[in-house]
Image (cartoon, rainbow, N blue to C red; front, top):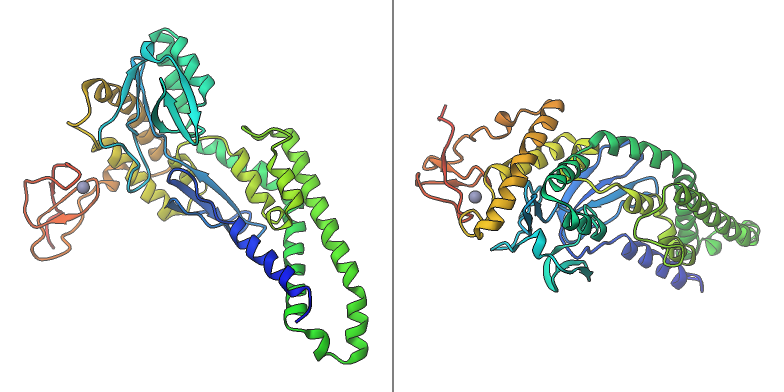
Length: 379
Ligand SMILES: [Zn+2]
């Protein structure tokens, strides 16, 4: 063991911890281990990064509110995550009653009251603009927003651009990671003691060169991402609080520059658009089902106050045809997604069309309050 062993151990520990993200609200993580690969996806509060510097990750929260020309409600519509992050009873406000908007620790606050998770889908300027508009202009604007959140082609194009612009950084980092691994084996395995004396001495003399090479790769990777950032600015960051500055001082973080560029410059879209853009087929199917089921059998039905119900219904009526048309364009029929499952046991006779749980008594409701439907005939 050499005096370098603790330094390298600390490096790997920071590298592992740096990959972990704990977003304030549950989100979908889309993750690929190599540039062109299809992404796997999962929903939750804890997200690990790809160990490969060639990989990328983007975190996409569900849209946690409903909008209509009348007002806004914190009832998510067309949620892709399960369990859906939704309030038991929704809050709703008319636009003319919205006096003050702010964001505090990841929460959007309306009139000083915690309203919903703050996600990149709308910022405060967008919301203030909606408050100031007349209902007709508002309707047009909301329809435009709905359209903007469902553009997988745009996401695919953006991914291509980002992959091309992060090629140098990814290659530098892959080389640097391999070098770090080799140096770790050299020091931790005390290889210098195992080799013939002449060899060990000659190799040890080249070590400063290798560290210099690592420094060079670090600078080159940072420089290429700084150039990319100039061309595609990262919303919500300034030159002073740039994550690039942190990465410059913190080499383990710099090894994930490609992933960082993806997280910071991915346009805000619906998780379903991300699944269609780069998810594996099973990911696409899972999210498509979740979104369609949430549109057909929404939570909170019968519990929310009339204003929240009306706002969510308006939003749902505009979103549902867009989702169905988008899925049809990708060869997914809603009827296939919603087809009744076969019974999972001899006594099963009904199922919940939203959560797909099966029941032995027909005619009731599942714990979410959704009316049960008959299962597909046996055979
Ligand atoms: Zn259910």
